[in-house]
Length: 356
Image (cartoon, rainbow, N blue to C red; front, side):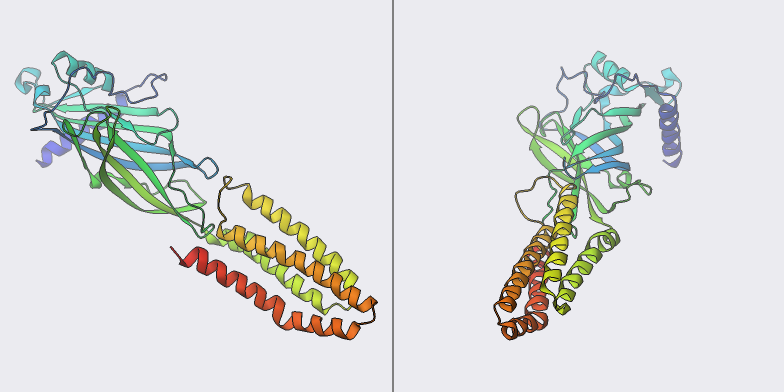
């Protein structure tokens, strides 16, 4: 058995190195022969699926998709593909994938075709090869790059959100003819994904049944993994400047000249507007507020209220009620401003981060 596996891997390696795919081939090259049903409801063809992502080329939050370089491994056994190893002189035959589809069609069977369910772009195949053992066991391996939909993105907790990424392989044939099982040993995430913004982990394979191209239930194997952000970036670039702006707003109360307070608070208001635009540029036009949106909007309102409050204090001073203005000012310094921001942050953490 060990010798068999070694030979098997040698043939597949040679095939991957020697196979040249035409540049115009961009889709699943095993689906060219679909005219003959395979398997039976009593004995469906059992197919193993392995999915390994070697690279993440991009994560587009606004389009809600991501690009990846993926190694897809498909294994099955079809007695109709068996051959006489004595006559051939070896235990394996190595095929270009289109040649395997043609060979299967000649003998009255087909390969178990599949689609990538959440594929959004052409799938450009870098390398592909198929190895056929004398007893009909087949191994198909391809390395390709493509863009995949990520409809499970939810930004309510942004930037403390954890997002879910999917790679979904669905059989073209109904489940009663072809069934899938996951090959966990050949699946997961590579060690050098090339993605700096996200920390990606918790990769797992999940099987399910979905409505396939035939309109009937088809087997699906999905590689699902999670990603969360490097928070150091947001602490330094977002939360630290916000803390500085809040501190500047609080320090305004120690100025005796109300006109100067209004000018500085007006400058802070413009900074919050710029913050809002910069952050919204990274996200789609959502129908809900994120954690960061809520905090920013409340800070914007508090800064606007600060301007109005100082205008009112100046009016009191001009009208000869300076003592009343100073009492209100002192009350705002000690209670209204700090407790207001504490209440905003506390509510945001509870409503957006703690409540599911």
